[in-house]
Amino acid sequence: MLNDIAAYFSDNGNTYLGYVWQHISLSFEALLIALIIALPLGYFSYEKPFVRQLSTLLTQGLRVIPSLGILFILIPFIGVGRLPALIALVILGIPPILLNTIVGFASVSENLLETALGLGMTRSQLLTKVQFPLALPHILNGIKLALVEIIASATLATYIGAGGLGTLIFTGLGLYRYDLLLIGGGSVAILSFLSMIIFDLSIKGVKHYEK
Image (cartoon, rainbow, N blue to C red; front, side, top):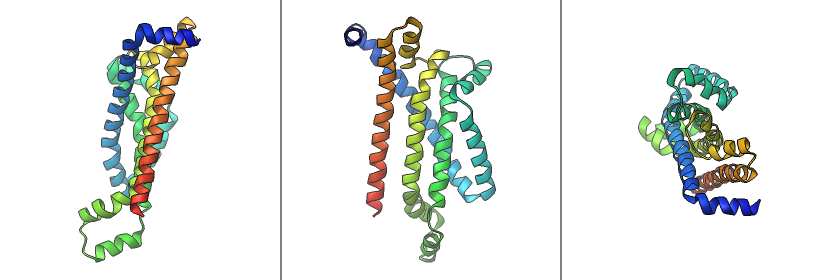
């Protein structure tokens, strides 16, 4: 097994790096779009109780749908390739960021907000200097959860021709190549683990700074 893995990297090193780059670029592009959508929507939902309830119900509903199901739903409308995979991953990434953004802003003490307004802060100052910094640990946790889910789900993008590390996994399954399964699955696991460590350290740093 180890000899097969070493032989693969020796013969296909550049191809492997291409798969890694496809996987990372697709994942982070989806995360960025999800963040652009979910962060302002989360704050708006926090401000409007009815929208908050509706957003929570919709996002919880989205989380029930498996990522492969979202991919297959999109195929009849926009075909196969990178675009449907990107849209599916964005849809998967929105719920954890949105929900944690709402929770983050809701966790800020009302007494603190009233005190800040009483000291003469404007609404924009209140948002940028009080609410957002205090909500940031929750938001970062939502981004972490979204990224881990996106990285794991991006393996399924191979089904519709979007490339990535899933190519190794599904090739390994088709050819009974356990070395390819281990390389592909292990690489996805390492990417997810590194993402969790980076965001956990970021969250700890933000909480330490707040103290």
